[in-house]
Length: 198
Image (cartoon, rainbow, N blue to C red; front, side, top):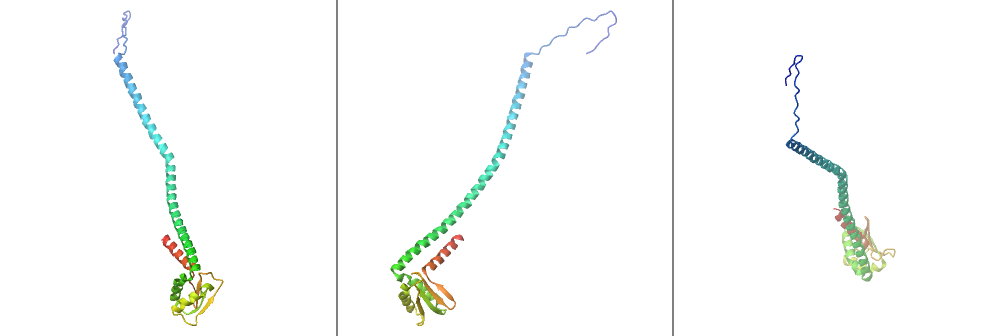
């Protein structure tokens, strides 16, 4: 826009400025742009809030998940421990039941011990056997079995009332071999438990 200086008495004619009002299209365009900007800002804020919420939730849940994983590991090892203990208890129960049955059988029929006596004597044949101690009710049976197995004539047989009805002890110069029912059952129990622990 240019200007001009007018000398003295000449007056400039007033110019009326034209008042321009925005057209309705311009109003509509600016409102639409404003609405788009608001919608975009709203969408970005929602996405940002969603991401922040997920991160916060993950941070809160992570220790709980770790604790749950640890609890599951503990349960798995506990299950294994319980299974192992149960197996050992079952072996002990089975041995206890077998012991009762064998003791009952021995009290009814002492010949039931003949296998144990023969096996113990055969194990000791190479050693110097000095004496055999047994419960008094087993003396005749043990004497008969040892004579049939070829024991020496000078072998001392000693009935011992302090021993239980299923106990037979072979004394040698190297020590004592306990061929009693309870000892044999304890050996079986130890062997089974050792095998379970492998």
